[in-house]
Amino acid sequence: YARLARLQLLASEWSDEPAAKLRALGDVVRLREYQLDDKAGAFDAQLLALQHAATEPELPQVVSETERLAGELGREGDLIDAYRAVAPNVLDSEIQRRLYLDVADLSRAVRKDLDLSRDYYQKVLDTQPDDRRALAALESIYRERNDDERLVEVLLRQADVAGSDVDD
Image: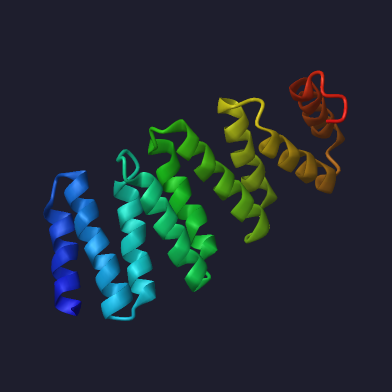
């Protein structure tokens, strides 16, 4: 199985077609995880698949599988760098938004990097100015940092988004 996994990895490198690369890397992931009991190796192959899936219709499944393996291995922090590399190339705006939000959330929770987190919440707002999740997260960050000027800006944006909903 180890030799077959290496062969499939080579096949992914040799192929020029993204779909063929993804199939070969999927085989590597399955062989490493289920036949060789090597989840770390499977995760590494899954990260390669993620790089090649950015513009492919299989991206949602690849992201889901990557998150599953990261969770099982306790390597959620590795998703930050992987998503940062892939997200700008993603064509589907909703998936790109999700990746940006994941980078922001994980940066804040795992690495305690409020600057990176803030930057990625802002990227979400640049494409979707009324994103309530990003606005609420930025509000929390600015409160934590005692950045009153930016906090007021975010609160005003939230008020605009809430519109006629007085409770919000």
